[in-house]
Image (cartoon, rainbow, N blue to C red; front, side):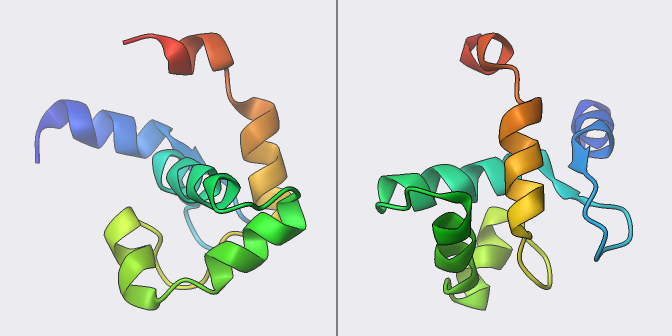
Length: 88
C-alpha cells in the first residue's frame, strides 16, 4: 500500500454512529452514485438500494459489514465539494 493511499484513506472517512472508525467516503459516494443511476430519487431509496446489494458487491466497492445509514448518505452529499470532486 502506498503512503499516499494510506493518508487519503485515513482522512476520507465518514463518521457513522453505528461503526468504529467510520466508512470510506469514496466507497459510499460510489454506491450512492450507482443507486442514483439505478433510479433512486431519495436518500431512503438509495439506502434501500444499497442495502439490497449482495455482500460481495458491497465488499468490492469497499463497504464493510453493514450498509450506510440514510443520515450518513445525507451528510456525505452535504459535505461533498462539487468543485473539488470535478477536478482531475
